[in-house]
Image 1 (cartoon, rainbow, N blue to C red):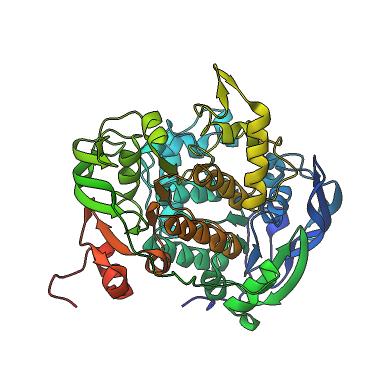
Image 2: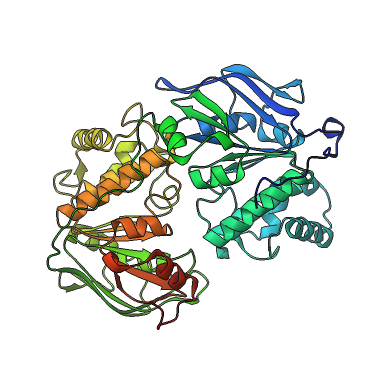
Amino acid sequence: MFKARKQEGIELHGDIWKHIQPGEVVLEARGITKRYPGGVLANDHIDFKIRAGEIHAILGENGAGKTTLMSILFGLLQPDEGEIYVRGLPVRFRSPEDAIKMGIGMVHQHRKLVPAHTVMENILLGHPRSRGVIDVKTAEEEVVAIAERYGFKIDPRARVWQLTEGEKQVVEIVKALYRGAKILILDEPTSALTPVETERLLESIETMTQDALGVVPFITHKLPMVLAISDEVTILRRGRVVDRLPTAEATEQILAERMVGRPVIFTLQKPPHEPGQPVLQVEGLSARNNKGVLALKNVSFTVREGEILGIAGVAGNGQHELAETLFGLRPAESGRVQFLGQDVTHAPILDRWKMGMGYTPAERTEVGSIGDFSLVENVAMNYYFDERYNRAGFLDYGGLRQLTEQIIEEFDVATPGPDVKIQTLSGGNLQKVIMGRVLSREPKLVIANLPAQGLDVGATEFVQRKLLEARARDAAVILISEDLDEILALSDWIAPMYEGEIVKLLPAAAAKKEVVGAMIAGVYKENEP
C-alpha cells in the first residue's frame, strides 16, 4: 500500500518552494559536526540530502547522533562546523523560528506541548498570528481542515493533559503543518502509538509526500516500518554516516547489523525457571484515570518469584493506571494489593520502595528522571533513604558516585561520566540509567512499564536481557508492553487487557499471537481456540 506515490511536479507555496520536482534535493547538510562538553562528538562531518517526494529514514542506535543532526537542521542547535542549504541556497538557522520561516517543521519524540492549555492554544502558541488579533473560529476551521486532509481527528478545544499519546502526536504534526511546514522531520513518530494509530499515521505520511509536503525525513527504530514506507535509509553510528542505501536493497538483519556493528539477536531465548512463592497478589483492583473515568476495572492476578507476567494491550486500556496503582502513584478506587503477604493498597510509595518494589515508568523524562540533575543525583533518588548512603541525614555522595559508576559500567551507559546532566543522554542510555538504579537494588518485584519503547534494537535486546536476569534471581516481574512479540518472548503468563479489564490469564507457552491480538482489540470470542 505504501510507496505508490504520484510523480508529477509538486507545487508549493512561497517563492523558494515553487515548482519543486520529485527527486530534487531540497535540503542538504554538508560536513555537519557537533561537539558537546566532555568530549562527546555527536555529529562527525555528516553529509545528508533530502529529496522532494521521498521518505528518508534515519537509523542508528540511541546516541548515534540522529536527533542532534535533525535538531541542527531545525535550528535548535548550532553546528560547530558544516553548512546547510535549502534548494541550493546557503542558510544559517539561529533558532527554530528561522527554520520554520524556511518551511521546515519538526515533531519531537518527547512532546513540546503545554498540558494545561487547549489543543488550539498550543497550536497558536508562538505562531506569528498570535502577535495580533486572532480570529479563533477561523483558525479552528483551518486546523480541522488540515487534520481532515491527512486523516487525523482533532478536538481543538480539548485540554492536552486529557489526550492520549497518539492524540498528542497528532497535535504536534498539525501544529507544524499549520505553521506552513514543507519539510517535516518526525523523530520516533510512532513510539507511543497503538498499531491502528501507527497505520493511520503512515497513510497520512504517504499523503503528505503527494501533497504540498515535498519530503518527510523519518527517524525511527522500528525496522519493519522503515522497510514498508521509506525510499532511502541513512545509517549513523557514533556520530558518523556508516551507510546509505535504497530501502529496496535492505532487510531487517542488514539494517540492524549496520546500526549496531555486530549481529543482533531479535528473539531472546527464555531459559526454563521454576517459579517460587507468591510475591504480589492483586484482588478486584479498580482505579480512575486523569479524567476521573474508571479506567481499571476489577483486576485480579498473582505473580510469583522467578515469574514474568506480561500485561499486553494497546495504549489507553488501563495498563498505565495499573502500573501506577500498584506502585502507589495513583489511588485505588477499590480492591486490594498484597506484597510479600502485607496489604500495601494504601501504603506510601517510599514504604513500597523499602519493602522491595521497583518501578521503571514509561515517562522517562517527566517521571523517571530530573533533566537538570546529574546521573549521580538521579541515582540518589532511589537510594537517599538507604542507610548505606544516608548517615544521620547526610548523603554519602562519594558512595553514590561510586554506585553510579558501577551502573554506568554494568548497564553500558554511553556518557562522559556520572556528573553530566542526565538530559544530555539519549533515550536508550537514559532508560539504562533508570533500569540500572532500580535493578541494582535487587528488588523483589519489578514493574517495568514500556521498558523498551522507543529504543533501538541493541538497547532493546539489552533491557530484555536485564529483565530475564531479574527473573533468574527469583524476582517477580510485571512487564507492560504494547509489543506482542516482546510479551510472547519474555512472559511466563500473559494478561491481555481491554477497556480496563484483563480478558483472560494465559500461559505463555500455549498463547498464540493471533488470539492475544484479538483479545487486546476487543474482538475475541470465548469459544475461539
